[in-house]
Length: 90
Image 1 (cartoon, rainbow, N blue to C red):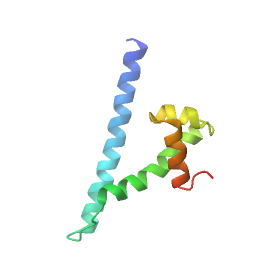
Image 2: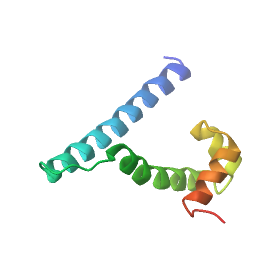
Image 3: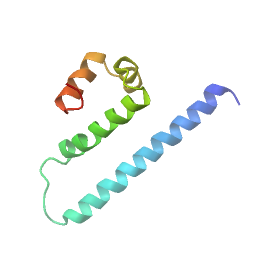
Image 4: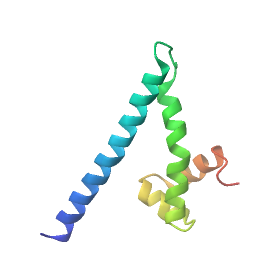
């Protein structure tokens, strides 16, 4: 098995694990909500996921925003703006 195939399988497993965790959390939230309506579930989930995602990637990159942006697949300036908006940097 080649290294790229092995990485592909690993990446696929990680994506599946993340997806499973998100699905479980959303199911639990909806169950807890019962008949009540949230109104902006998408916005709430994105807000709850975005800050820890950026924090963990930045920690992984030892604070290097350029590397973190590369891992996240977003522009460095966009990442800096989001980090400021989320009060993760000054």
